[in-house]
Image (cartoon, rainbow, N blue to C red; front, side):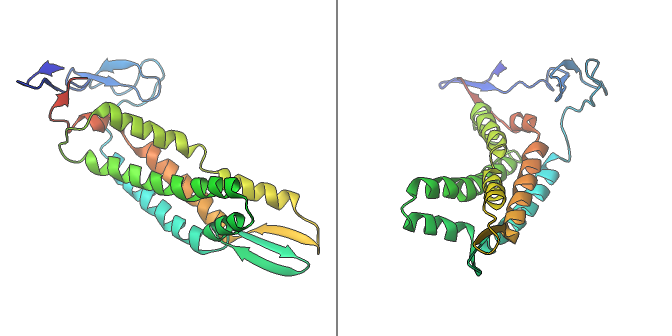
Length: 215
């Protein structure tokens, strides 16, 4: 980093590309810029992925398109003594709360609504902010990106719960539980948002930083 401020200490961001280096995204080995293949793992080396944002937005939009029907159509179809009942995600949360299962209702609401919506907002925010100069700390933005990646591993909790219920509750005419079309839409939405996060080139967070506050 090169000093560039006066009064309040500011530093200009100095990236690996500015130093003539490129890091491998697979094994993290640093090589001179212009090297096409990583000498350690054989992975392809590019200083920046020019198609990163296009793929981030494309996967995020597809994930959002599947998330809408995941909330409109039934997640579970329960049948008790031949009487079928359908429940959406929010409907199931309300029903659990009415039965007094506040803890389970809170977990389902957090996993099915709060986390997916938060991921869409976080991914969109990161993809939007790297396109123009900003003065945000890259450390905080990278933490936000790491949180999005980490949450993606646990986003299938709802689908796992549905799969377990379907496997356990099969009593022929007495009671059965079957997954609704929303379960498939929700699973696809999670997969596409994970692909969106994986497509994001986090090195771009450094490119549009005009000045970096001294930390």
